[in-house]
Length: 266
Image 1 (cartoon, rainbow, N blue to C red):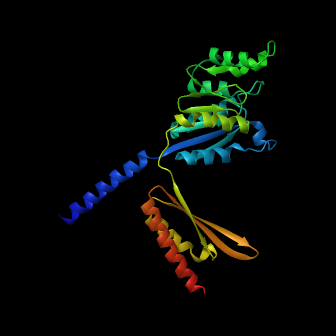
Image 2 (tube, rainbow, N blue to C red; image 1 turned 60 degrees about the vertical axis):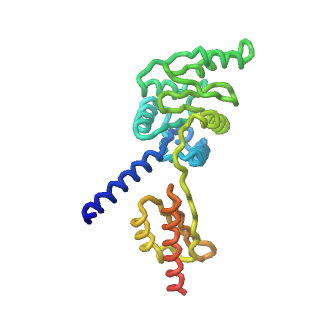
């Protein structure tokens, strides 16, 4: 085989491999909704949870936006993320008060109507004692046209799914329960492999070599995290990727580079 043909064949094989890798990647965006988060009055607990939850499913959380209780802001954020990622999740703003406007904002984003959903009304009416299913509480039954309900095993008031957008409560306990409910419906991708390498040196001593290794292994993500404990500088290197063989090769090169740097500085 001619050298040019060999090169072309390698490029073709690599293209097929990269195409397969791309198909294995499932992505997500997360919109955290609420003035109370932006003002600092309420400390968000949902971002860390959903990041870990999705990672376990093999879904890459790519972007998080925190937006105010403003219909246009919510609709804009949801539309931007739903066009970019496999899934979008939102938390907050589906309660009974006047400033819970997420459902209306999602309806606006999708260009559909919204009204009290008979399924949601039946769930809530059965939940509250006679005379306590007030007009305010009936607001929680307002669901955009065409949406499917997300079960709420904690407080009954449902979330909903429309398109690739999953709309959930902001209260962490409820939001987490809703994520458990929808998990079986989510398509996971190839899970990311992650390994940490402790380095007894400041990161400046290995930074250049790490950059070279990262360039040689673009399928991996190599993070360098400096530490200072009692005046002693060290580094944690984290290698992440989906191909175990590639990750192992990158780790071996990093370990060799670390050993060389340690010897040079001893």
